[in-house]
Image (cartoon, rainbow, N blue to C red; front, side):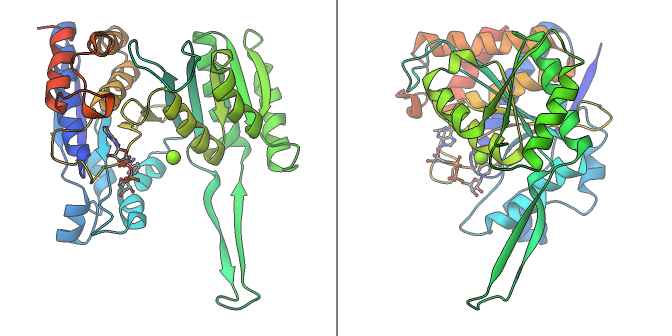
Length: 351
Ligand code: NAI
Ligand code: MG
């Protein structure tokens, strides 16, 4: 029997609530589909920072490396630890240290969820470049505090970085509806974005079965609202993908549903699966958090591990619970607790 060892990082706030909820659903899937799923919990969080002066130990990455995957809740407790500290002390080192260059986020409406759009029939997979581009951190400030102050933030696009994320997008498109949208702003940014277009053409030559459309980021942002059903796989740079996936989350019913996978497709390191939402201090620890984003992220983890049938069963179970409209958290107009929703989904997955 395959036995997957998972590193659990609940983190802060509702991260703790939703990882517990999601993990119980994944356990139900492991029983029903007959694979082993064991987890070790790591208490790395803002509380850990306040006690030890670090978000995670110095050898944190080495501790995580042997695991099949990482299942993370959320980190951040802005009243006591600055967000820049919590983000740069835990999430970013994991994403960068394991070179998790694909950030994949599915955007569609689960059956029964009412989105804000008239359009309800869409199924978008956003692939955001996760390691370079506009968030490379290259730059600086000079002449601080004077009228001559200058700030420079340089985007870094490498052939290796752009090609590998596009290639991953094409692979995904091939297994879906065979369409890929490449997002740039190559009319205005004539170096990096024209380069992105050139690399898109190069990679596209290897995928004659995939239909490629180029969009400027502003135009595709509008299309997410006006005609989301026309989109399949969307590949974008770090900044553009960041913004587009917030639109994606909004049209799929909000943060309670938005799931994400940080993947290194070459394997050899653990990929990381997490809901898009943060630690939501305003509702933490009160059983109010919607666990569906974490459950969906767990399904993405099962899919990544190769348990495709189990992944589908988890998502189907979540949809059946949502579709009845009876067991919903308050953000969806219900009165059920985080744990009650998770228990209902787990029961639908199987005994
Ligand atoms: P947030 O996503 O935590 O919350 C935004 C709003 O959405 C809040 O009103 C919250 O109650 C609601 N919300 C979020 N998830 C929900 C869920 N599952 N069910 C029901 N309601 C939900 O974003 P915010 O408030 O900007 O950030 C709080 C902390 O989380 C900060 O420290 C921030 O840095 C951190 N953060 C961490 C992320 C991560 O770990 N990946 C991502 C985003 C924020
Ligand atoms: Mg964002």
